[in-house]
Each structure stands twice: as C-alpha cells, then as structure tokens.
Amino acid sequence: MDQANPEISVHLQTIRGLLAPTGLFLASAHDVSTGYNKAWLRDNFYTSLALEAAGDTETLLKVWRSILEIFRTHEAKINWAIQNKPHASWQYIHARYNPETFEEFWDEWGNKQNDAIGAILWKLGDLHMKNISVIQNDEDRGIVQRLVDYLASIEYWHDPDNGMWEEWEEVHASSVGACVAGLKAVRNAELAAVPDGLIEHGEESLRGLLPRESSQKFCDLALLSLIYPYKVTERGMEDEILKNLEYHLEKEMGIIRYKNDRYYNKNKDGWSEEAEWTFGFPWLSIIYTEREEKEKAKEYLNKARKTVLSDGRIPELFYSNTSTPNENVPLGWSESLYVVAVAEYAKKFGF
Image (tube, rainbow, N blue to C red; front, side, top):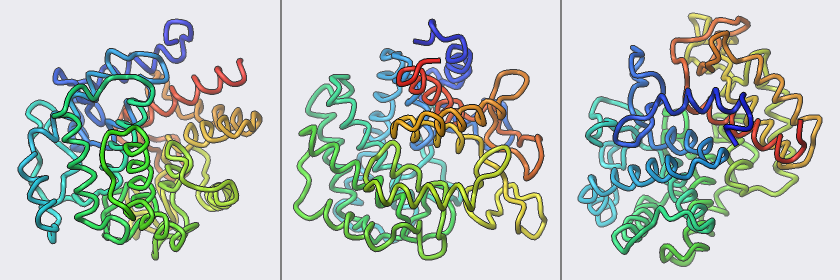
C-alpha cells in the first residue's frame, strides 16, 4: 500500500528511520535531548500499527519478536512479580528500555503502566488470529501466559497505575480497558489460559469508571484507546466519550490530553494553555472511519494534515494556540496513527 500512496510512503519512511538495529522503535529521533531516544512498550505497539496498515509484515514481525525478547530478558523479574504481588513501582514490568540492550532504565519514572501490558497482549492475540506468526513456539506461549498471570497478580482492575501519560497513580479506565481487551484477545486466540473472573473484574471496574478516565479526570485523550483499537465500549458510551472529548479537549492543532495538563504547558502556572497533541486528530479520523461516518472521518484527516511540518514530519505536539512544535520531532506514535488514518480512509471511502 505504501508504494501506491505517496502520502503513506513518506511517513512510513520516517517511521522506519526510528527503528534500532534490534528491531525496536525509538519514540522519537535518536539525537533528541528529551530522552525520547528510548524504546517504550506502548510506543512500539502504536508505531507498529502503521506497518500493519501498510502490509509490511516483515518489519512488523521483527518489531514484535523484539518485544517478546524484552520479556525473555526480564523473565526472572516477571516470575517474581507473579509469585509476590509487587508493592513498589520498580517491581512492576517497566514501560521503557534501552533499544540496544533491552535493559530497563532505573531512574525515577512512572513505571506502573498496566495499559502497556494490555496493549502487548491485545496485539499478540490479534496478530495470531490474523495468522501473522509472532508466536512461534512453547517458549513464546509461555511469555504470553506469564503476562496474563502478572495482570492477575497485580489485580489490574483496581490497581492504581501511572497510566498512558506516565503521571500520578490512579485507577485509569484506559489502563483497565487495555487489560480487558488484551486478556480477551489472548483467550480468543487460545494463546493463554485466562483465569475465571479475570476479565469480568475489569469489565465491572470499567462500568464504575466510565465515561470518566479516573476519579480526577472526567475527560482524557487516552479514552480514545477504548474505542480504537480495543473496542471495549458500547456504542452509547463511545458517543459520550467522543462528545466530551471534542467539546472539552479539541484545539486548533491537536487534542489536549486533559484539562490543566502541565506537560509543555505554555502557562508557567500550568493552567489553560495545555499542549495540543497531534495524534488526536488521526485517532479521531480512524474511529469515525470505522463508524462509517465519512464526513467526520474526512474532517479529522484534514485537520491531521495541518499538523504535518514543512519537512513532512509530524511532531509530538504544538504549544498552545501556536504553530510551534516541541522538540520531539518526529514522534513515531503520531506518524503511525496518521498512516493508519490515511490507509483506512482510503480503503473504506477512497479519495
């Protein structure tokens, strides 16, 4: 598909430029000073979606087998966490790694990110059902089973984690939903034994949380993940999440993550000048394409095109009410959702 669509081809080239020799994606360019030249589980998951949309199975498999290698490297830690419920953040499976050695970074970070484990399980199950053979042997299946057992050990459904944005610990709907989706996917793919009640606990927790993201956040960009890719919400709840997000969080150059987000906030007091995240627009376009709402899908795809810089790359975000990006250029996650949005719109509606 990337050869047939020049727009997709340009962004796929940018994405492939973020690949380390090991097969893991860096979150951003190798020479950025922000620390984004590391490999996050979540970013590798989202960035790999573009490869799948473009039909690049060879690179897709390389990425996912490298992700399995991370868990092989840290097998002893995972086994400990299964046998001894973690009580400190460093005992959790970490979310980011050295892309060359697969080692954890030990500086203080929001390391409790349950949604990342749910995301990995979801895509492993999804690829297996599509006959894309990431899981090759009993050792690989053993990794999947240990990740399931890990989610049971931490009691993910009421475990306060740092969430998608790696910030303060709360029970996040986006984290619980990712785990629910991941457990369902590996169960349906028959890749692991999922204990009775493990999924139901998460579904009950979601019913208590939604449409909020958490006790402190009534609306959050992370909630889009429950609609795409995970599809763990009913249509009426989807409508409510989308209505809230578009009304409260949509800006000119992107979607803010949540009200009074302090990350790259232009106001030194951290109020009312939240950064505008570029991947919000293609994310909404993908969702509306899947809902077969052509005009809305086209509207957000066109808004996404406005976030592409003159050199063809897409940044992480723009400062509030400006066309000035931060230094995380390109962001693999943003590039990837843009590719998926273009590819899915073309497939569904043509151009």
